[in-house]
Image 1 (tube, rainbow, N blue to C red):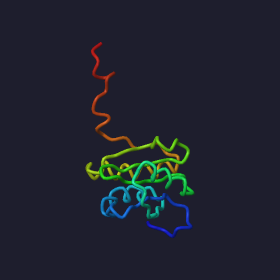
Image 2: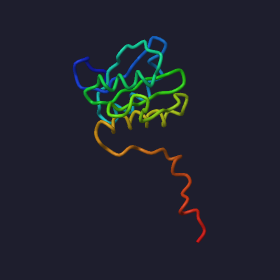
Image 3: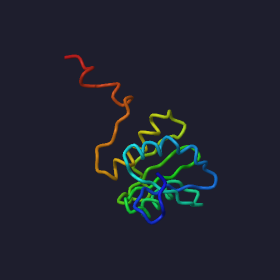
Image 4: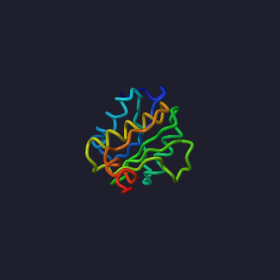
Length: 129
């Protein structure tokens, strides 16, 4: 739900070289959590810096940006060079949607959703006793 510039929302930094279509699954994940978002046009080449600047402009403290190969989620209270999440945008749809879910969950103060792939190996369960 793209909303007017004066309403509280996650800010997404969009460059002229980044097509809006690559954001589709991420935006669905944000909307599933019920958090509004808005586009903001930027021209800075450094995606991490743009994500942090977007977070500083967001009343919800969360900003996103995209480079040629990844999507970045930043939180205003983190150092500018240390984003919270970095995800290759060539990933499958579920992982990109989960990135959007987690950006929105950061706003809501809820635990992040973990990828099922991160649970595929349990070192305690796999250890012989």
